Length: 81
Image (cartoon, rainbow, N blue to C red; front, side):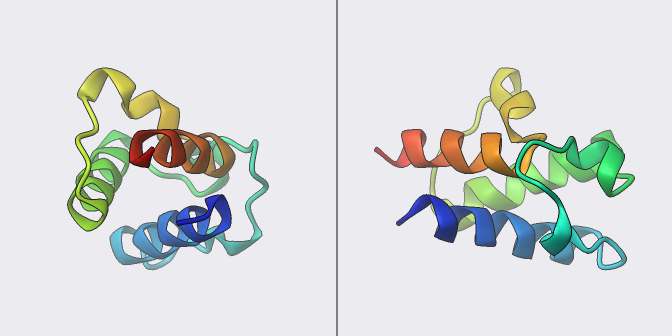
C-alpha cells in the first residue's frame, strides 16, 4: 500500500468519525486537531479505526504520530513494513 493510499484511508476514517470535518483540503503538515477541530476522543477513535482497518497495532504512546496527515501516512507505511 502506498503512502498516498494510506493518506486517503486516514481522510476516509476521519470522515467516518467526524462527518462534519472535511480532511481532503488539509495540508500534510497541518495539525488535524486544529484544522478540523478534533478532540482527543476523535483522535482515539481514529487510532482504533486505523488499527482495525489495517490490522496493525498502534500503541497509545505512538498515537501522536497520527495528528497530521503526512506524519500519519509515513507512520502507517513504516508500521506496514
